[in-house]
Length: 79
Image (tube, rainbow, N blue to C red; front, side):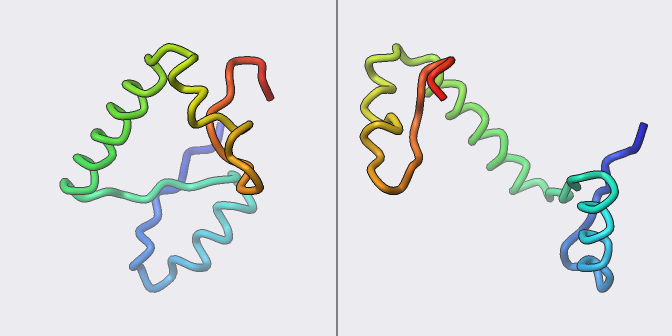
């Protein structure tokens, strides 16, 4: 099993390491400092709050009303 490479984009060799990670593993992780970890945690909490809403409320931002942007919520099995 391969491990997920952790790559700091500010490293001098970041470009080459990102390229290698995407070719060999398929993805990579970026380390987050404390303020960004807090923002990530906030984002996860907001997403959980949104997905806990009733479907009729989420439908207000559904892909069906997203227009040509082709983005928005869709129900389970609605892809």
